[in-house]
Length: 121
Image (cartoon, rainbow, N blue to C red):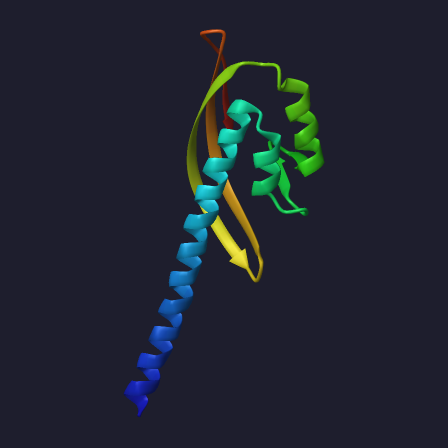
């Protein structure tokens, strides 16, 4: 009987780990895909990718979805090519919430020239 209980606990633990891992992969892919919306200023796609309580903390600045929409609208005339490189440090989920900690390096080419190389931690 003890063996069955131990085996059951292992299966339950692995099931929880597997779900956390699956959620982490989904969150990472969503972040990667959403940053592509910055390259073409796709406000509607960005809104679809975010929840109403979305918060971005970047270099000490706290932005909500409306702050980012204002940024999109201010810059939507620019023609850029943006290449992003991510290094995910931590992704966690709790109930229906998830958060990710990552570094991001973005190379932004505008008018054929490297306009900006941004490194966020």
